[in-house]
Length: 377
Ligand SMILES: NC(=O)c1ccc[n+]([C@@H]2O[C@H](COP(=O)([O-])OP(=O)(O)OC[C@H]3O[C@@H](n4cnc5c(N)ncnc54)[C@H](O)[C@@H]3O)[C@@H](O)[C@H]2O)c1
Image (cartoon, rainbow, N blue to C red; front, side, top):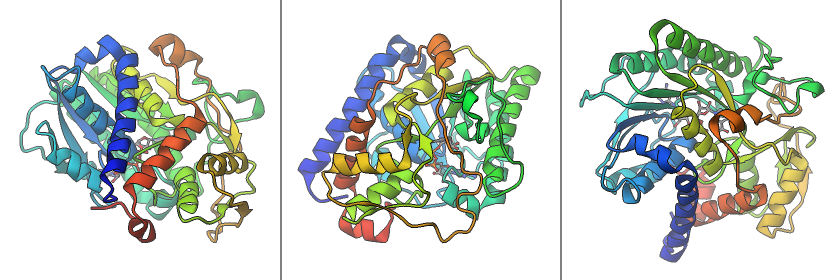
């Protein structure tokens, strides 16, 4: 973190604005968390950052007279981020445990979890290519362990993060893609370990609900971004931000034509909590933004504009031979079901969110850390 306390204070104000927006949208539903114990797996990751900070915010605000408690579990395969150590040190309601979810659960306190937010996975394509079998194991055995935990604790709800990747590369008439589309995914190839195990994860949730009554909820995230996404993650937006922070041209690894929509983290977390707190068991919900559907080239240009940079967008193919194999050409959600059944509605504009993300990096990542490529403390 930079030594500049005014920048730190500004970042806190921005984050609190995000959490306040979520608190307002979720409203009375948040009462369900009053005094409850929540397990967050994958707590050291990007969405873990959002959930933990939001829960800490609730404990300082609307739940201050009925604080929730959080067990933050992760195997810290890529280190324990500094923000997590600082957050836990500042909050008596948060406990960190080192837990590989593919191994038997070892919670020394042993109390039940009222809610389980199960985010542990290997989510970055750069990383799951390196660890394909670990990815399968985490997405299948790890999820099964978490469903067993929810079953034995009779948890009120468990949230499973599937992925928009399970749609693979849909034909044009299936874009925007709704939940009834069954996918066009290869069961072999460099992305298969992630895509296929996420698909099987949905089946596991379906079976645990129908056979054991486990109230499993399924969301299909579409490209989330914002503060908390580690700079060295390998996903497209942190890569672009890294180029900007290092004041160099933005490097495109594809021809720049594939399109995506991007969903700011406070909108995405709102959608996930709406699903967790709903009564829609074992059926999938898309969570993302419908627009703009933007090409990688235009996204890079937009980020340069937001940053006020005069640098260019350049094309340089990856040295990894199969970097683009099975990379979907277009991805865009149809949100009609999530809007109708969950009351989900994304609010944050892409340009605004990009500014927040860049600002967060600028304030929390020193040049030294940028050079080291790490945020680990
Ligand atoms: N962020 C997105 O845009 C997005 C899109 C689609 C799906 N998802 C899914 O949402 C969930 C959270 O995503 P994220 O962006 O926070 O990912 P992330 O990679 O930032 O965080 C995942 C965390 O899980 C941990 N983990 C991995 N294997 C583990 C294991 N065996 N035991 C314990 N911890 C383990 C990692 O250490 C990491 O801290 C994942 O399931 C991901 O697949 C996210």
